Image (tube, rainbow, N blue to C red; front, side, top):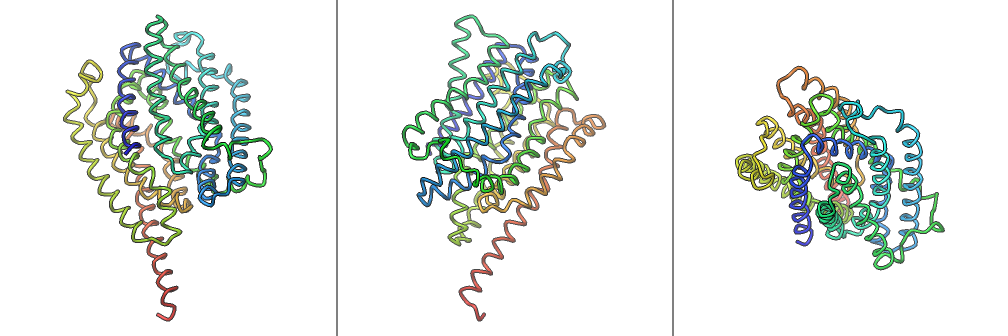
Length: 433
């Protein structure tokens, strides 16, 4: 219930921030801010799956109350993530002057002064943020999802405070908004890390003495498969703003993100309900509670269907909501609305089975589906945008097409595993049957 409330408040704060930013800078400038942060988000590649590997391994060592092993896993994860993001920053500083960022953003050269410096600051802050986000992984491994949810809530709250402080000081502009968006999560994550590692997690806080290179395989074994999936999904989802800039106009970035944020309510609600189930699926699988697993999968499918109807209701409510939210009616194409409703349902449906398979370490089917989707996503998006009249919705329809194989095959794999597990359990109880 606490988790639901925190994510609900985070969602409302996120809506408020969009309205504040759009009224502080124009649609084009806000689109540029979104695109720059999307590009910076690509550095999450350098996690190479360590975060997910840590979540699975640490969850087990915490459950077994093995504090020494937990401390070693955490120390090793921080060390390797630090090395990787540090190496990336050195490489980025070398190549940043070479790249024509105006071309990447599809804006007139020289129209944004100090653009290279903007990218340096933003990428540096994102790198620090990704290292610090290991505290979120630790909280999730310890099944403290509500405490983890409070990080996003406080980040959004701090962003609102920073917005009004900048406005009061007379320094509210494109640059200050861009930097404040990047600084806020870093501040909150530093506070959480200091408080938790000097309190609740003092016994397992990272230390250079406990970095154990022999645990690298534990963190990267399954982690590399998670990493491959992560890379492909970043390609599918994080290239959206860049593709909009290149295939349409920079102004369309804000339009798309407003629509996505509005219709993302259903997936946000679903994620609130689904987040704790990863660990629960893991425990139930090893305790051979297969009926419980199947019952909960069916329950979540029903919830996803109900949320689909919520998305349809949102379509009819949008003209009223936008007047209160954005202080004006901001039109959204019908096809974009339709595509987002379909996408949200498929995304929720797929996540049910992905969470189960992730929880029991069976990620190979997801990997194959992700590779297939990742290979066709960008070419399909370009083709749909150029040779159909779908407009902005071509981005979403391409994502839908790329998610469909995962929806189909992960659900088949899940029920196949459950069936085989039941047969194995039955044969062990009745060996002569």
